[in-house]
Length: 227
Image (cartoon, rainbow, N blue to C red; front, side, top):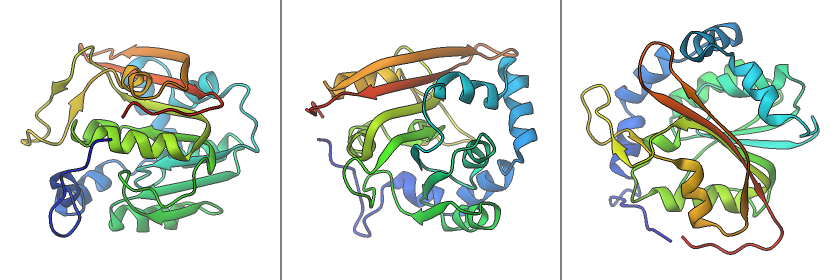
């Protein structure tokens, strides 16, 4: 398994940025009500995030337990609550975003922590998911984050991330080391022999050439990691 490149305080370069003013500004830009989030996805892809959730979570009971890794202010958790899911947990690195999530979400367990070291037992959640989080983890650190997500997932790993068939670094608001695109579903399948792809759909942006992917992976009994 890859070891994250951490400093003496136990943080990667990306963690330091996200916990500072840059991360705070990101949170302020992306604090959305449910209708605003659905409208944003509809503008980008012609389909709302709620509709995508219904598409991918069909057959997963409302009693299922969910963990969102990198929940920020809880936009996605609010949507899941509205769709009837009640066993929801979020973990967020940035204290400012976590305070916002706690003010918005009732009946949701929220903790501060890193994707590289999730503070949960093995197979603690039926579904573990990310939405626009893996793209901000450095490629050398990604296997560790994916291993932690895989470890905590009992049945499913669900993701919504930027897509590229090849690893591609993207300059993000003047920074060259904060955003990457790749085929994240295939990366999971390469790392873990006990995962199978249940569903994947790639969404072309309506106004540019970018593509996002939403995928659902199922974990079979018996686990072996190639990380």
